[in-house]
Every structure is written in C-alpha cells, then in structure tokens.
Amino acid sequence: MLTLGGCDPEPARPAAPVADEVLAQARARMVREQILARGVADPRVLEAMGRVPRHEFVPEGQRGEAYEDWPLPIGYGQTISQPYIVAFMTAALEPKPGDRVLEVGTGSGYQAAVLAGLVAEVYTIEIVEPLARRAEGDLRRLGYGNVKVRAGDGHRGWPEAAPFDAIIVTCAPEDVPRALVEQLRPGGRMIIPVGSQWGAQELYLLRRTATGMRRQAVLPVRFVPMVGGR
Ligand code: SAH
Image (cartoon, rainbow, N blue to C red; front, side, top):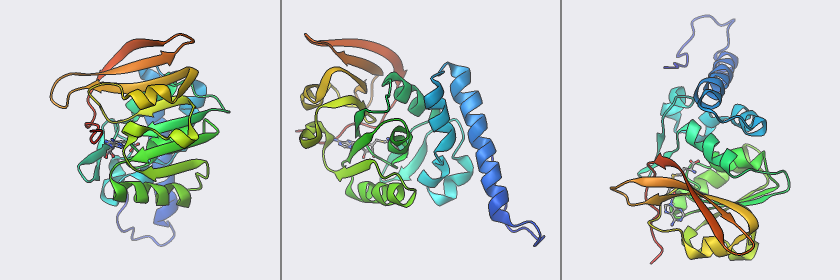
C-alpha cells in the first residue's frame, strides 16, 4: 500500500513534490502491472491512464489508495471503478481523436477525464446531483474543458448532442436502454454492464451496424445499479 508522508521533520525536503513524485510512480506502476499486464495494449489508452491524476478524483482520505487495484468509495453509496476496468472499457470504445462520446454515470468524473484526453468531446450524465456538481467542479479545476456534465437520468441519453460515436455506461441496467441505442451513430460502439443488482452482470460491447446491432459479451463484472428510468 502506498503511504503519503505525514509531517516531515526536515525542512529541506518539502512534502508536496515528494508526494507528487510518489504518486507519479504509483500511476506508472498501475499502468504496467494492472493494465498492460492484463492485456490492454492500446498505446493511447495506456498514455491517458498514465497521465490523468486519479488521486484528484478520490476522497482526500483515500488518496494513498488511488493507484491500487480496486474500486474506492466516492460518497452517496457510489464508487470509482477499478483502474483496470476503466482502461478495459475505454479501449473497448476504440476512441478516436475526433469522436464525441456519451458517458452515463459520471461518479467522480475520472472516467470522463480519461476519455477527455482521447476524444474531441465528452458528455457525461450523473443522476446524483451533488456528485454531478462535484465532478463538474473537479473537471473544470483540472482543466478538462471538453467535458460537459449534466445532472439527470441517463436512461434518456443526451438527445440534443446525439448521435454519438461511442457510449460508455458505468452503472448496470437490467436491459440496454432504448434511447442510448438510438443515440449511437451507425458504426458507433457502446460498452455497458447489463444484469441485476444481485445476480450476474456481464459487460457487453455493442456495435451499431447499417442494419441493426451486434452484441458481444466481453467480461463478467460488478457495477452499481442504474437507477431511475421508470
Ligand atoms: N464512471 C464513474 C464511476 C461511476 S459509479 C467514475 O469514473 O468515477 C456509477 C455512477 O452511476 C454512480 O455515480 C451513480 O449515481 C450513477 N448512476 C446510477 N444510475 C444512473 C442513471 N440512471 N443516470 C445517470 N447516472 C446514474
């Protein structure tokens, strides 16, 4: 486990730069050992995961665990996903520099920040209003100017900004919401966990073709439920 220095008795060694360096090393190790070692090899995704300061998106008391191999609580009963899952889902979207991407489930804003460095525009929706506001503030403070945050129910998507080149859903509905399928452009990709809160969930990769949808199960997962929608 990574521990950040408490009080340093030596005034010649200021704490903040040391901590930054330790965090950067922990981030590089996370990319190598948790992501690359498990088969996510897209160099742009690895670079983005190595650049975004994940510790800025977790509660202050949890910063020492920001680069560890597990999800972390972010308040309101929600979590920031395990780094590997963020990388896996991001790579599955095949993000391109000109893409416009919709995310459902902003949470901490971390996934949106990772995408922001890979595509042109990110639209992200969060149903818990204080989480949406906090993520919006953090993303602005950290300079992610190409992310738009909305508080609301992601079941409806973001019709005014549709169609999207890619859609990522980071909470689990029992079925793929119809509006999201309709807001994906032909050739577009969607990555979404589907299943019940208590039973199995499976991560699906959907691809919109000229005539319909292709759907492929890619990984068993465990996400918080997608609420609302009725
Ligand atoms: N992507 C986030 C992790 C998200 S956790 C990150 O990088 O930190 C899943 C989030 O989905 C939670 O914050 C939860 O409040 C939100 N959520 C659940 N149902 C939703 C819905 N119908 N619309 C939008 N967000 C929803």
